[in-house]
Amino acid sequence: MLRSQQQLLASSTTEEGRSTMASPPARSVSVADRALRGVADLIKLLPSGTVFLFQFLTPLVTNNGHCSTANKVLSGLLVALCGGFCAFSSFTDSYVGADGRVYYGVVTRRGLRTFSPDPDAPARDLSAYRLRAGDFVHAALSLLVFATIALLDADTVACLYPALEVSERTMMAVLPPVVGGAAGYVFMVFPNNRHGIGYQPTRATEDFERKY
Image (tube, rainbow, N blue to C red):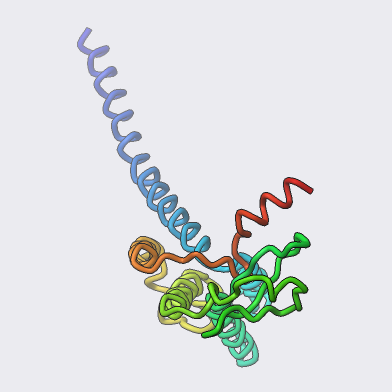
């Protein structure tokens, strides 16, 4: 009887030890899930095509993180070009013409200057798309968000900022919620109603595509 009780006690102790050892990985997985979810929320704030191009070309130009001098130059150019385009997209807008086409253009102090001519443009009030102070705020925010995405990319960090490789896990856990919270506050103060290059189409565009 005593021997059976000792066996039961030993088995229960072993099971508790196994459950205790298995709990840290579950906790780390939850932290990783939150980090990835935060990164996904940040990507939604940027032009989708630019983020896809950056993620596609980064392993090529950085040689998967094993950079030579040429790789560092190419990686720096890629980050600068993608970041510049993210900021430039904040100064673009679009509308649906009478022919159903989507006309993109650059916002100016007088209104929207379209890239392609619209025959019905004289009948439309394009001054409503004029440049605003919030556009500069959104451009700066886009640069901040893209810089965060670049810092969270392992190949880019290994190529351009090797000293930050040690703190990469900390950045994954801290940067997305901090930058996401700051972006949410900025969008609350300066709402963004533009539908520029690389962003979701307007409601009128979606209705036209469903109709035709």
